[in-house]
Image 1: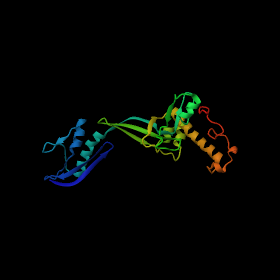
Image 2 (image 1 turned 30 degrees about the vertical axis):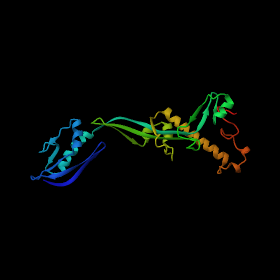
Image 3 (image 1 turned 135 degrees about the horizontal axis):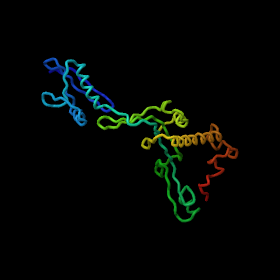
Length: 257
């Protein structure tokens, strides 16, 4: 018996190589790896044994015929059924802040809460991203959302596989909110560990549209206030247009001392 080459099979749930030999009678033969045999046997795929009584043996008159035999049997294992297809949203929502929450308002620390309310009945609140005395960061919030088309496949062995692709015009249809979200440009995720997934609905989509629109509006307000220079020393504060955070008026829920 002479070994002539190594062949391979690859599919969504299967990847293996097998050695091709030619016996003294000119037949092309192979015995597929033991771990692949065990996978086939779990779903009752019938296999032939070789001379040593090892299962997974194939024999053919040509290399092409041998490969066809192996691939045909392997494809029985790789058969898959579409279980579900839908539009989902990958997203992350991260806030970075620290503040003191009393019974009547929000404060920068416990001293402000005690002066305003008396006692020490307050909770220290943190954002979703870590920020503390040993890990200080600018306060703010970040939103990431990415619509994707999800297909869920089930293989013969019961394995489930998810495949993601771009949301196309057919998926969007007449949904203007989904179309709006798919049109967002240059939005990326840097949360790493905080990425989540949720089924798309028009209501969930509208939440993200409003959240992103709010960021757009804040940015427009900053541009209107400061123009191209974010340097307060070069600007007449009294001429600035009113913003919620401009310094002229504080949100009602943030208490003054």
